[in-house]
Length: 474
Image 1 (spheres, rainbow, N blue to C red):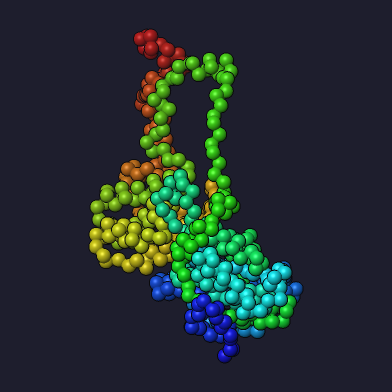
Image 2: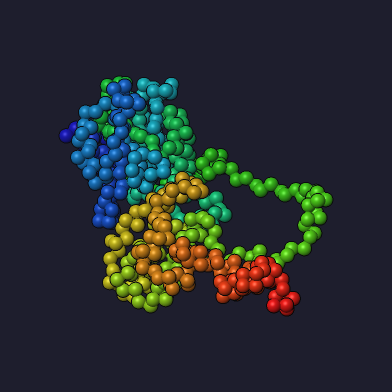
């Protein structure tokens, strides 16, 4: 076991050592999983470890590890050089799109680039940082030496999910930042406070890497080590502490400057267009969309589909044997519309399940796969990763698949809006065209007369036959 020096400032003592004393296991103090995560989806949260060097293609080699297997994984890098680890957690890889949990705020102090601290000692650096913390009302961070510079880590008491879907955010009328945006603002502000130590105010990347404690810095040949540990703080508390130091520039850099809508300028309408607008509109009522019209976008289609499934349950009365299918697909489509989100998924799914099952005799684990997809969908929405017509992580089946899953009959399809077969679509189209013909005054042609073709017996053309019939000559 390595021995470490834990320095103390004159105004506060550092707390006792962490649960994991050896440097290489330092990440185990913050890359952890809750009991619920371990029980329900233990393989979801992951971290990435990266090795940099000319011997690797593209200059680096990266591997992803499950948090629950981190003890064994860290052993592989005990004497590695230029080894880095993600400070946050991801569902896979190391990109903002796959970010799932925020773990800490940090400052990477490149002290060797500053005149004041390029030849500093650990003790002086720690004492000066604590002085700045006290003057700004900040709690003391955990101190780590990177082999050349220093890391300051304000580790959260609980991991913070990156998305937070409130009613305000769902409406999209407010500039309330999501968790990932709040983290970026806080990261920017806290790095500004320590600029004199060589911190980088542009270090806002949630996927950024920190040197793995216990490994060797290839530039200096020195080993990265843990120097001093202090109490973890909650994410909300850190935001509260940093709020007085936050300026409008910090908000604009992360959220963006809110653009005021340009006033509409009434342009002069050309005479031809004026004349066209003055013309009467024939059959103005026909301009209204059909009751079965569904706008072609993911959310409106999903809404129509879960309404169809609810209608199907109402028509059938009892759906014994199909209840988990109904629960699964209704939850899937409601999540696509935004009416369900991961933060409240269990409570909302339980209400839907009890309504369909009419009892508590069902297992929530049957929806665990869908829960993970809803989580990923919310994560991508929170960082604006989903654009129009982009692939989304939720299920988007064809009508034929749903008709097969629920054994929907032709008679039942006549009462549904969108879960219908191609034959039902054609039947509705024929009915619609028939109604339009009647509205235009067109009469229904006699099918029997058309088959008998009486004009052939009279030795005249079809046109002549109907002309004479109209005059009463036939």
